[in-house]
Structures are given as C-alpha cells and as structure tokens.
Image (cartoon, rainbow, N blue to C red; front, side, top):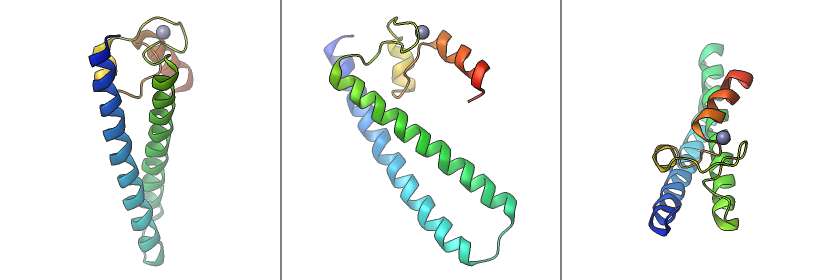
Length: 110
Ligand SMILES: [Zn+2]
C-alpha cells in the first residue's frame, strides 16, 4: 500500500470512528429517555440491534487502527493477501478481502 493511501485510510478511520461514537452517544441518550416513556417492544429491539451493530463497527475500526500501527493493515486476516484499496476506501474497517468476507458472511451470517 502506498503512503498516501495509508494516510487517506487513516483519516477515513478516524472520521468514521468519531461519527460512530457520536451516534452511539446519541442512541444511548435516546434509549435512556425513551425507556421512561411508553413504547413497543419491537422498536426497542430494533434500537438494540442498531446499537450493537454500531458497537461492532467501532470495534472493527479500532482493530483496523491497531493494524495500521503495527503494519498489518490492508492484509486479509484470513488468507493474507492485500485487500483492494477500493474495498478499504469504501469500508476502512474491513479486515478481510472480498472473497473471505463473503465466505465469512455465508458461514456466520453477520
Ligand atoms: Zn482473504
């Protein structure tokens, strides 16, 4: 990976991380507020699902930032090939190449 690509992705990770944390803070505040009011279980479950998806992504981003520091960023954690820059650009927290991600989703349905 070229240095400018790495810089670009590092900034993308930071921005995504920040906006996710903002979202999580807002969601948590909203959940606290709404818990005192009346609401249906379905809405609560949807909120919960969204919350855990965001938390998951925060963890992915933080793992990617650590990989960026130790020099293993952009290398597929499953098969070891370089992940396409286009893929990283679209999803900077990605830890797997396209093929391995597809295989993973089929297996774990994440
Ligand atoms: Zn792979």
